[in-house]
Length: 228
Image (cartoon, rainbow, N blue to C red):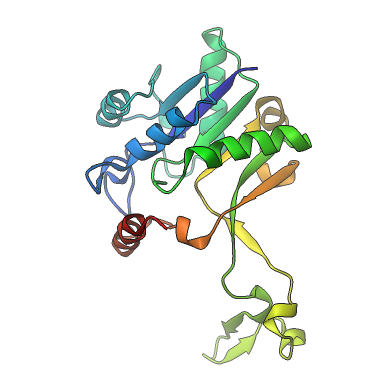
């Protein structure tokens, strides 16, 4: 059984330029993802998919492999992560390498722990799932969500829950945006992860932070320093 770690890191990030190799508390942020993948000890290969020479150089410095460059078609703003993954798998196949399971790890996810990577792999195997990934519970019940109409007035999205107690409402979760495991044969057949047989790894909100703006970056560094 062979496992591949794919860290996706194109060079053309827009909202935070050069985000994938920006210094995060002393080292390029992508180094955290590479280090976590290596320390998990569940991969036969840890690779970075990139179109960028500087990213490739830094990735190799921190122990990842960059056996080929990402194509222009999967480096633009409309290419999906699944497009990138399928390209990586095709390129390895051309070189005679085949993997049964793979894990896509995002390059700006410094909170991932090696044991979470292991947990995702083991849980997927134990229950016979095709996909596993970390999720976080919404801090407030989404059934009590508010919206604003075209006249600027507030209204309740689910008015039937206007008198429901928060503790009585079913919990809902969202993708933590850090990594996901998948069975290679399954993703080739069905390219939509959430339509596949998926299982969650539930993690606390303190270990998650989207990094899309400068404010997000500051929050992420603050959270990481707390080591909660």
